[in-house]
Length: 203
Image: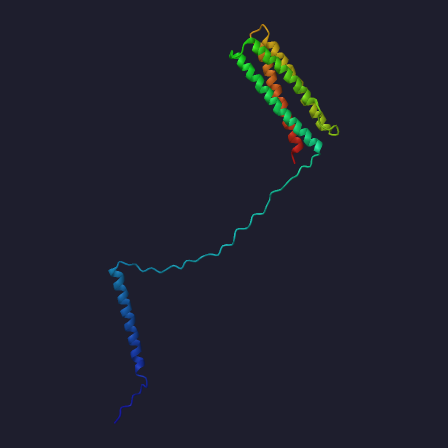
C-alpha cells in the first residue's frame, strides 16, 4: 500500500535550513578573517557633496568722474606747476651755496658771486610767475594768482637780503634770518600752488 505524502513540496522545509547554514558559515568566515588580520569593520560613511552656488560676480562699483576744465585753465595749472618746479630748483641752489659758505668750501668772492646770481634768478622768477597769469574770467584764479605773485616777490627780497647778510659785518645773524624767511616763503609758494591745483582738479 502506497504511503500518501500530505506535503506536496517537501523541499520547502529544507531550504530554510540551507539558508541558515549559509548565513552561519559566512558570519564565521568573516569573523575569522577580521580576527586573524586585526581588521576593524566600520560602516562606510557615504561622503555627501553639498552643491555650492557659484560666487556672485562682484558688481563694478568704480565710478569714473571726468573734470571738464576749459583749455585756458588747464594751461594755467600746467604753468604754475612748472613754476613750482622752478622754485624747488632755486631753493636747492641757494641752500647748497649757503652750506658751502658755512663749510668754507667757497671763497668770499665766490660766495658773493653765487648770492648775486640768485638775485638775478629770483627777479626772473618773479617775471615768470607774473605773466601770463590765469584767464581773467575766473575771479577765483585771478585772486589766487595775486597771492602767489606776492610770495614770489618776497622770495626775491629774501635773495637780496641773503647777499646783504653775507657782506654784513655781523657774525651771520642777518644771513641766517634771510635764509629762514627764504625757506618759509618758498614753502608757502609751493603750498599755494598745490592748493590751487587741488581745488580746480577735484571732482
